[in-house]
Length: 386
Image 1: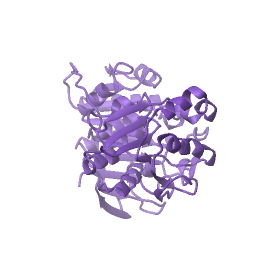
Image 2 (image 1 turned 135 degrees about the vertical axis):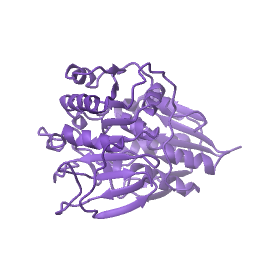
Image 3 (image 1 turned 90 degrees about the horizontal axis):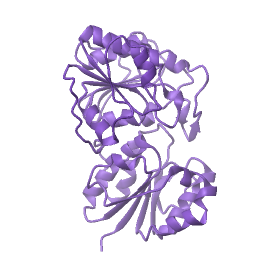
Image 4 (image 1 turned 60 degrees about the vertical axis):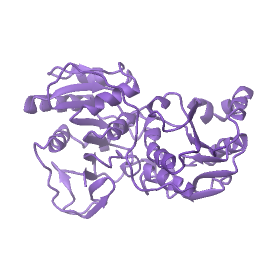
């Protein structure tokens, strides 16, 4: 009988997407193992066929709430998960009070090998790698190194997602896909709708670009569209996750803030402009081993304030939103044109140049004279294919 391995990723869309490189590496190393993923219902649809053998869904609210989790009905569900030889936790154990629920999973599955990140709270783990905090390395790198404990190759590899073709009647090029949202975790990550509208208007006027708006019903597409002077194809709330991935794959450039849609765009390999405010791009930046990206984050001392070190930080940021207000439409327009080959941003000084599996990265980690700028805004990272 093949080894039964339970993979735990009970978070949001972007979290699961950033876990797929590790799952793919594990699948390649242990082709005969039975891989079961325990995840949330709203994220499961992003998984491509064949990546795992089985998917079990548990609503995040049921797991995050100890009161709900320990109700007899939910305890019976956990106990019905079955026996597993190994359980792998793709989570940071950030809060001491939250660790008992992860330990309960180990107890319910009778797993003898319990693998995860160790920050002092993972007392129930049998094998671990150090949790150096959010942003010490990218989330995808953490998970690749975690499955290396099972023999998998931790080398960088692309994320993999399910896609479904969705034919768009508008064939005008270049096609710019815009997501005016910030994911379900926090509204603090959203860039102003008026700025997105300015970007769309300019790219249409300057390049004849067609504009496609994507996302969910709770995003800001309606506010963006109301301030646009050019036609746009509005697909918000009209696509499945797989169809959205298919639409993103047809884009010449994607523009959006930190969100699951950003990670979906990165997974399908579209060049992208990522707008970061309070979030931490060192931890949650677009994972693009094979495509180009420009990530913009204002050089303010308080950013990032979300997911820093071993702290969740400020979920809703601050009221001022200075980090987002300092990123202007002109900077995003220039970044998009650079990715389209219309212009090329030239860093004034390369402070730290590295070549990684995600391409050539120019990174200016400290506020120093001559820092890399794009139209006056210090740029956190510019990534191009190696």
